[in-house]
Image 1 (cartoon, rainbow, N blue to C red):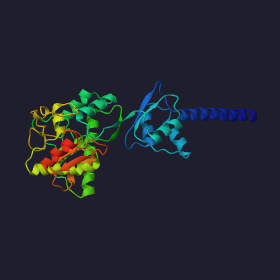
Image 2 (spheres, one colour):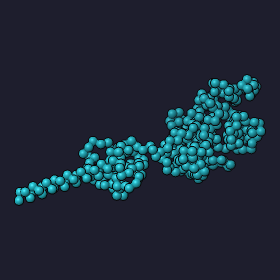
Image 3 (cartoon, helix red, strand yellow):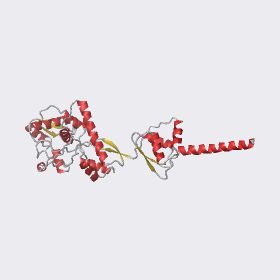
Length: 333
């Protein structure tokens, strides 16, 4: 009788040991996927919520055993949103490490330079294989505009100027609409920052963005931005045409080293040699410094400026037309 009891106990111990060994192995390598699988972790998902989602889809061995296993250990269960590629060989430790660090492999970093146009942004996103250029431009025209953007007749792209130039991280499957929305929201955040930093309310956002886009295309150094802003304001007050070459190039739709007299005669609402006042819309995406310059222009009586064509990268400013003509001769125009 005693012998049978001993045999039974040994059998139970062996079975328990084998079961524990199997459970531990399954817990440490928990995924029940045949091929690579993308685990989608959303904002607000905790580690336990991720386990429950996987369990509901029957993609892991046993969520409860895993919870018991991690609770008995001091493991960082910080979870970052993203998409994570796993397979049947992915260990629990590897998966937890992925969630801790966040997955950058499925994201694309894009830097939009200051002064880029909507078309240049669209091409860059296409080059990065995020979204096709034509699709992006189409969605730009379909995007529901904020109230501060008023669509004028003959405007080329209503969102021109409002896609803030910055460095972004986008998931590879991010839609054109989401990319556009992220850039517009970033512009709004920067405008709020400027308001808080300067204490000045931007009442006409569209006017300031148009002015800032002109400054962005004209200035080569930050110290010139507020001076160029003052020239624009001074000429507007005197009802003078702005005559800014960058607007001619935008109207032409191409870059040229030298703007000719013939070029300046192009009949376009963007050409400030042809129309009085500001162009019909922005001509590029301005950066923060150019936007600040429109809010806090330098107090001057300047009406003219030209690029010095030297190492300083600065412009020459004056309030006198004869002085301006002499400067043109001096700097080789």
